[in-house]
Image: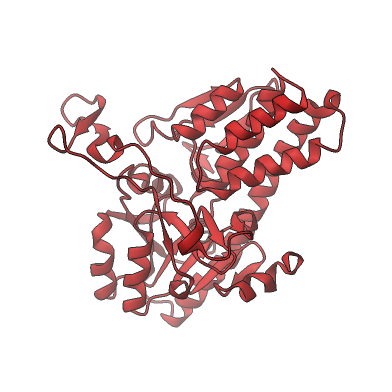
Length: 365
């Protein structure tokens, strides 16, 4: 995507082809900072501290994390240790485990002397694949937006509500939930996005709104609790969100608050779609509501907010509750499949059922 007229991906190799560059998402929207990862420890910190976030990008970062780790250590035991450390960074996003297993499966077939070169090639291929997959998701999702535009007789605009950030910053490029928006806009369809602020880390305010502004797409930032009101008053045509893990039965795990949006959409007969690459489907989990592990993050994310002072211009954290207040911070919730209108994948749109998913991924039977 373009940032101030320059093309960027969210992760890329430096010119020497060794260290890995990322956009530090903890500094957005007020500062655009490129951060360099030189060691596996750097990659672990980037994932844990959410300098990178979004399931596909976490997977890509983990793949390059293995590359960086192999520059320091190159035995079977050491590879296993590197892999365990990376997988344990964040428990909910399945792409993290998927990417680590993908590289391990490849390396297990070859001699350790060839691992480093093979790992870098596979990580680069994984990133290219991610871009192609997300663009395909965009094409399939844009077709849904186009149908709604036709139903409106090409009058007004198509109003889309999204929660959290599932744009190009959450992937290598294009995004998942925002890819259909970008594609629809490119096709000349007037789209408008209601952007949930997404407490407690404000990914909607900090990242999604920043992306949409950079892309020149009409949008408004709204508080998380405004979605139901907007739907009741006919101000939303459809909801599109991403997911960090989708169970085999179609249950979807996404940023905390997604479930409430799905309930409001169902109550107001508004289509609720989830956009995801096939790598985000956890075929080993049959029921997401019961079995997807939910990451609990530091209470300080709830008790403090980060922003730029209107008076000094300094970026700082502000405490919003009385000292000593306790907070509980589950990072995700699970939306049951029956609330999901459809799953937008790179292979097409599936019903949110095991049968629907298997119709697109028959090799998983």
